Amino acid sequence: MKISVVTVCYHVVQEIEKTILSVLGQTYPDIEYIVIDGGSMDGTLDVIKKYEDKISYYVSEPDGGIYDAMNKGIKVATGEWINFLSAGDCFYNSRSVEDVFSNNISSEVDVVYGYQVHSYTYGKYIRKQLPLSSFYKGMPFGHESSFVRASVMKRIGFDVNYRIAADYHFFFNLYASGSKFQPVDAIVTDFESMNGISSSMRTALLAFREFSMVNGNIETTQYKKGVLSL
Image 1 (cartoon, helix red, strand yellow):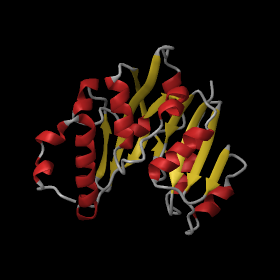
Image 2 (cartoon, helix red, strand yellow):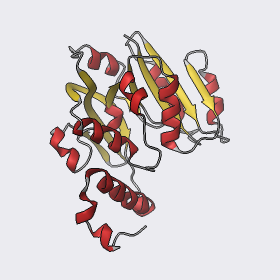
Image 3 (cartoon, one colour):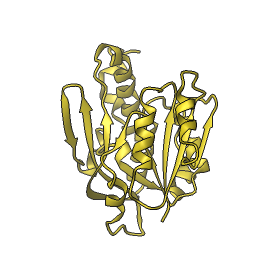
Image 4 (cartoon, one colour):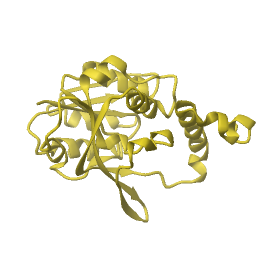
């Protein structure tokens, strides 16, 4: 069973190699690795080309943002399942993909997800899954720690009208429509969490707004009153 792993990137010359090596070092025997670069000019493409004989498909060209790039990856993927591993993030260890698919995955399941390690400058912690009912507050699992059936992703894709929350929008709608999710007892990814507070405040506010738009909570938040205007 082929698994497609997609990395989208732009100007990440310092981070991209560890992500590539994390994928290429997996013990799972049938991984299709796809890299969608947004036309980087900082040396990122040189690093990608260093491994081009081991990367199934890559392209470097301008795009309409991260979700447009992710949709490009979905379009060219030929695996049965798709995982998105962002530049700078890594699989937890060399057996991560194998550990996920060594489980008995029901044919009715559309999303499989595991745990995620969050890495900060001051340490790490394991983010375990929350109940799926938590979708009405936010993501109950890390996107990078999930695998989605390619047939589902190709049918729906990501809504590029969202700048930050298109992945949440995608998973929330799957949950709300009754799609089957299956948790697995495995740590899948090591996620590089944001450490800067002031530099990410605008991003956090935009994320708050978009998440609230998806789950319907925007009517009861201070954002509607203009307190959190962007």
